[in-house]
Length: 215
Length: 298
Image 1 (tube, each protein chain N blue to C red):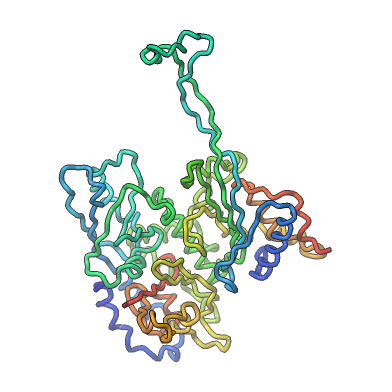
Image 2: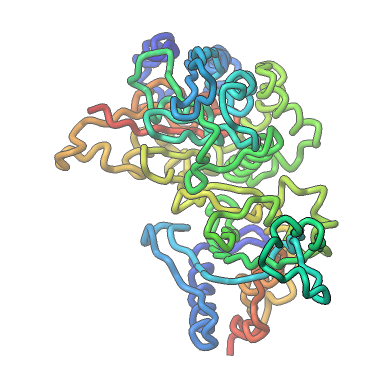
């Protein structure tokens, strides 16, 4: 096995460790089997993660509160323009995320896929997803925009999803895995997911840090 | 019948004994590469009838497009031409449909044709839409950057399978650019000057794994790890691959599929005895994947 990669067997083992812990703390990870016995044919899913996304600024007509006269219904239509003021209101939108963790047989690493839906159920665009990437990551990723986060076909389900591109994962994981290689085998999956997940709003509770350690 | 098919189908019929030939050198079969690169499809584009907002229905428009290319790279003209006949003021994204099937822009045009329309009359007749983008089926294409990104990530993945990514990662950024520009501008020499390095194989005379994707209509495509030689060092053949990945093709006991499958690559039905290593080197699309279409010929 090349440095920084993991096998399908280890992926499955670590996924079941993760699922056992998730069951205990009830944070909603599930295992989806589509092509049983096929490397990469099953994957981890976490649904219904609601997170505030883009603060949308909308302009609203407001009635000045101290001027009670304008609340008079009669004739207020004509006067509306004069008696209301336009104010900018910041509206936080809540998007519903769904995350899939798959295994790439080409790169021998886990890959994070996700979709985000708007409050009305329609799918969020790539720009909207980018706008909710925390600012600290944004500036660093700007140059690699097209090699980091793109829309791709889900390899098992065939539907469009966003993907964090796997081609740098092994390089990133190499030093992390070297440190934990010997006595305490840390969980590759947890180390990786807690590193890349926060970029797109997926945060693992700290208690996951213990699950990889052999006791 | 696909023009390309007529040109090429006879050439490969009588080469059943390739297992003995061993690895061909690239130069011998350069003509095959050129022939496939030059494959073109005549396409007729019609604006969806319910999206016409002008008094007159626009005339269809025709293009001869490279099989190796992608629709967003060739359909600028189509978009400009039809846009004035629609009520599309929002600048909604254009998408294409063939007989009710939305077409995935991120597949090479030749793959889309082989998969959905290989028995159709030419020109291939497509419907152009500017409304109701089917976002649960199609990826958005925000521009040519998206096509480039998709293309390059396929090339990278293919090289990861073939050479653990060592060739593509050893190249300079300008080489990557040259691959992309070669494809975008339809320049065979420019493209192959770089691509030949991605097709080299080491002492084993074959790639580590074979970058392939196998398609069937209405199903997600299949991609598996597949080694181009057996443990005894013998070349594995197209038939071996199909038998492993899509056994239904050979399963004549199942009623609805009895002997009715065609295996189409680049518009051609290569013999099942063709070594997959040779196919990978010569029949791959520019993204370095061998795109294999299973077509039900009933």
